[in-house]
Length: 281
Image 1 (cartoon, rainbow, N blue to C red):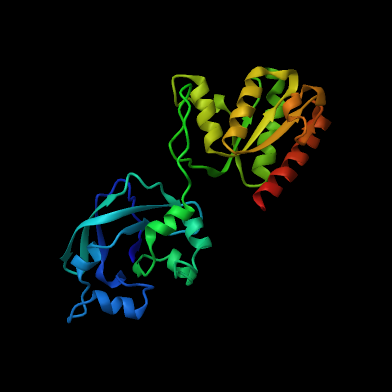
Image 2: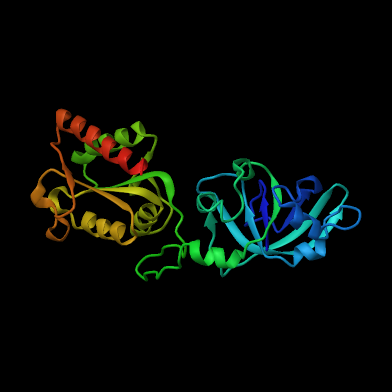
């Protein structure tokens, strides 16, 4: 069994949490509830503390849930004060994963994902996480990537030469992204690290889609495309000339464009269509 706490809390920062007693045993089967209440109908906190926990915030998408434990629990009027700890050895799981597996987790009531509640589930939490969490990944030494990925589902990044003649191309990419509800950035839009390569890699790592302009066979773009492919991102190749596509990736589909007003309008349309296809998967 495990405690599933679904509350509007920053679990990573909140070592102490207060929850209403009225929210305990929400969406919990009656026979389980009866095991954890005393003769006065109050939760038996010592018994609940013994169970592992999954700490969640409301939602059905990419919100992160963390495995951990309740270290201390006490009543304070109509609230329960909890001192919690997160398990540093277990990566977070997304609410999307929880929702996709809601039958297994006995969370079949959709409102359970959007309402504050403390449920107890008769499920082996760690066995479930072992099957569903994102695995740890090997990390390079040339630049840094987080141990566990965190993708912004609305972020598109553009990898292209920093040259004035590509200004219109970038504008076309941004327009296509905005037309499908996405936000597009490139490395010169941010300045978070002392080295530009770290900004580039961080941007790629957080992106749902990476657009690489191979025009002119720019080695930096090729390097960035390789990083994006390695990280498993959705990569869209664009180019002025099909001969600028490296041989090793020429089997991948690409979008060819002309760098003039008509050609850039066509590029916007083609990119918009391709991004919409990726979003709809």
